[in-house]
Amino acid sequence: MIDIYKKLFCGCNLPALNQSSERYKPYFSDSEITTISNVISNMKEILKTVFIEIFNIKEY
Image (cartoon, rainbow, N blue to C red):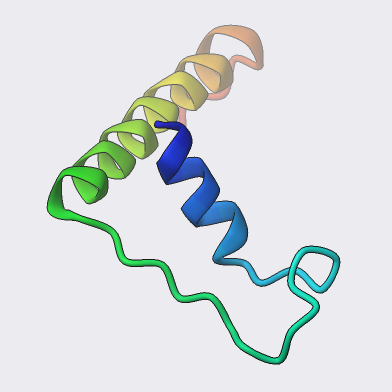
């Protein structure tokens, strides 16, 4: 998971992290893409719960 985070973060090519003119373009394996997809799906469910239970918002 740390490697995926590093790829996502460094892949943004933030000027503070990348002083060169070359852009970093990370490659994600099928397994990493599945992991990212699962994290996003889990986060969607967490946010849905927050909106429904805490903010009492039922339409999203």
